[in-house]
Structures are given as C-alpha cells and as structure tokens.
Length: 105
Image (cartoon, rainbow, N blue to C red; front, side, top):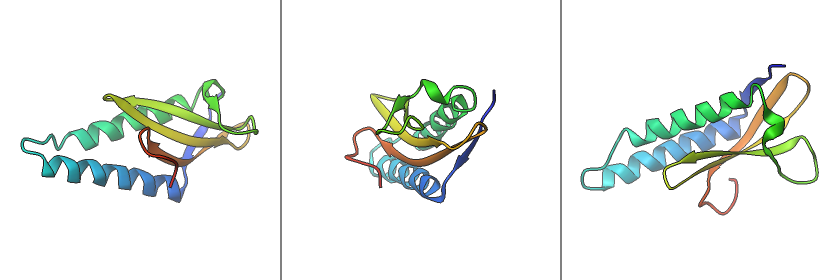
C-alpha cells in the first residue's frame, strides 16, 4: 500500500521557519555553512517519503492510533513531524519542529 503525503499550510510554514532559522544562524557565524539549511530540508523530505510506505511504524502521539510522530535525525538532534493517517491512502503532515523546541507552533 502506498500513501499520498501532503503538507498542511501550517507544516509548510514550519518548514519555512526552520529553514530561515538555519540560514540566519549560519549567516551570523564566522565561516557558517549556508548549505546546512538545504541539507536539513533534504533530511526532512527523505523522512516524509518514508511515510508513503510505512506511517504506522512511527510512534503514537496521543490517544488516537492515527496521530503519530516521525523522528527525522539531523546533526546532533533532529526534527519531529506530527502527522495524521487520514484514510487508507492519505497522510497529512500537520506540524514540524526541531527536537530542541518545546512544542509545535
């Protein structure tokens, strides 16, 4: 079974925020790596692609068996994507945060 993975507007806004954060941080560093933001987005896209075939392997987030979290390793920590398995063919990414953030935005 293959699922279609879609990003909500809020999840896309989270990706934009995380990308901007990395760009700004690296610009402020002497010798910062501006490619880091694109590498992080590539890691997230790779993580999202795993949801196409195996979303039920991710940890549950709450009482619903269809609300889950995907852990995406990157660097010393990584990212967490909150998603919902909507039906037999669709997974919706609801929010994305860095693992060191307190909660989803």
